[in-house]
Length: 372
Ligand code: ADP
Image 1 (cartoon, rainbow, N blue to C red):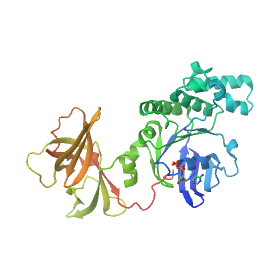
Image 2 (cartoon, rainbow, N blue to C red):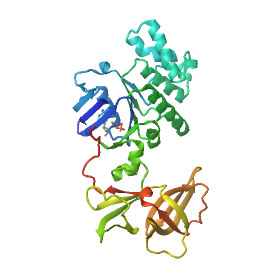
Image 3 (cartoon, rainbow, N blue to C red):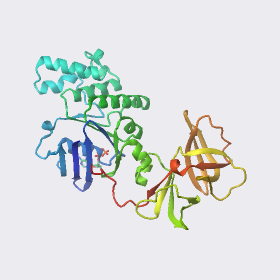
Image 4 (tube, rainbow, N blue to C red):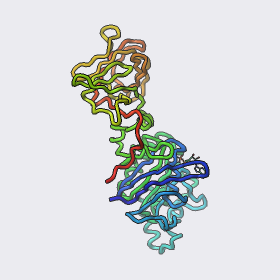
């Protein structure tokens, strides 16, 4: 069941095209993360959905066109990056603000404000001056304030961007839990990949002006669909590859050598592709027995010979760089794996079904929402 449907939305600010035929759906109760670099149009899309900016294309709520519905009648709540709390009001009064504006009866106002304060875990701070709160607490007040008037859609614009990394990770998980408990559809704008993955049921990755790929976090990692999306997700082992069939077998011609490709589905849209090697797709990394040999395969696995050219310890894992025929590849291996010193010859073994995928070289257009 679709709650919000954005179809063919374009927005121009003078000479700048900020959105170009954007399609997006938010289904009942789901949180969609709008993930993309700064300036790609995320805030503009929120402003358009909120009814704050004129635009081309349609926005529907449960099938009904919102063109004639002013922002205050849409019942969409917004949480901003800077929280926009009222400094002269305490926590309770900030949360109750929207209810007072709507002339909510006093008893219902107290009940509802207490309800949302409890939901975000702030009952004990109800009388506190908001200027004395930590960043994380302010963010929760902002969330409670947006929730108090019972919006039918919640929009969060970089709500954690002002916080430091550790707090952000923890709050992203808390926020994700609150949003799924509420069964309230939400659009969560962020430029941070990990935050998007922590809160979202589905992620819409934006490139400038348009949505490049929409899917569950697992699906977009499994199949990024374009080099842009892969790189944005941090999947940057991308090697140009040509897919060829010869004598009933398929092979990938790459700078790494010719790799048997029977285990991989052919690339969509032609023979030219980018071969993506997943960062955690190496199953063994060890000293090569001899010098550099041509790539070979063994029991369906690819065997690449190269040189260990970098290594850094990252707590839970080690990052390694292996250079194979002049191509630098970066992987993650277990923290406790013993590695030879940098400069050593190594052999990498990759199971192509788990550790590789093919991405069309020149996508014909954005991979956007599929019809339901
Ligand atoms: P994001 O939220 O992804 O950082 P924005 O939606 O803020 O991106 O901006 C998208 C593009 O539209 C940018 O090129 C930005 O400069 C432009 N833009 C945004 N708001 C305005 C405005 N009010 N007037 C002119 N250009 C704008």
